[in-house]
Image (cartoon, rainbow, N blue to C red; front, side, top):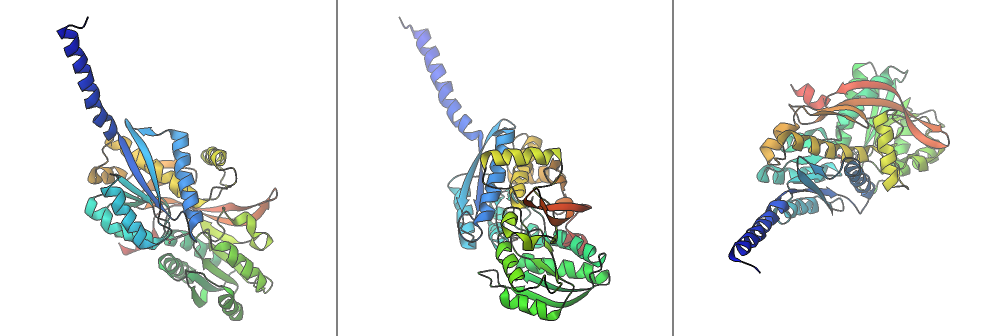
Length: 392
Ligand code: PHB
């Protein structure tokens, strides 16, 4: 029979269960991952989200006693959607961290939301140097175009290349790439014979490649956003630039590992600078590539995926440091100076700029056992973003 005491005890248990429900619900930290999952830059969204999920598959979904939940939203690559989704994620879904951002204008659109709501925002893909200056709540695990372009300038000047035409997408990262390749190449004695800028949307490279051919340089230096390299490579071959003896040098965005294998022979011999190659030889990368392929048998992880993987590594490490405190100021203080071993090599977060310090590798496209790979052969160690180092 139930007596008064057991009833009171039972009620107590029920109440403590009730009280435990909201407490347990609070233990979940939602991370809003905003990416172009459709449209011309869908490969970026696919890679970054696969990289982020691979991190969670390898390390689990709990950190500092909190459960981590990824909420993935598609902005289709348009900035007003990115901003609207960011606001919705913060206000309606109580997301505590925003992340992703496939292109510079999309990252820029979120900066005012990050500042106003004090929401940590992790740029996993976009690469214009100025992005981290747009809000003190922004940090980055991709890198900057000045970081990838300067070493290509150093390499070109040291390798008998005297005259170069630059060809870049006409927006933030392209302008950064053009500026920093040119600055370094000229400082080391090189000459820029022409600077060509191509539209970001639906580019037809043929008329621009004709201009490059007519200028008769030793090499053309190229930046195009990830995904655009296939069409470029085809038109580069069709227009006979390689046959005319013009060498292709580029940032690794052009020979992105996701699409490199489908580019075929014309890509072989291309020299690029970037932070990650699927073929990077390290135990951390072997484990990463294996875990990535387990969940995505039809894909090869490219640098975008590693931006996603390391974005999650940064979030987990910051939460460990704050013991689960995800409020903006505490989280951002924890981000500064973090360091870890990434599949790309050693990385850290510059405490002054919140940008990533990392190795940049010079690579050559080679056929390795029937697969095209970016094969690393020279390392520029622990590079900071040169744009901000220069401003000081
Ligand atoms: C950018 O818009 O910042 C961007 C996009 C794709 C890249 C690099 C940079 O591969």
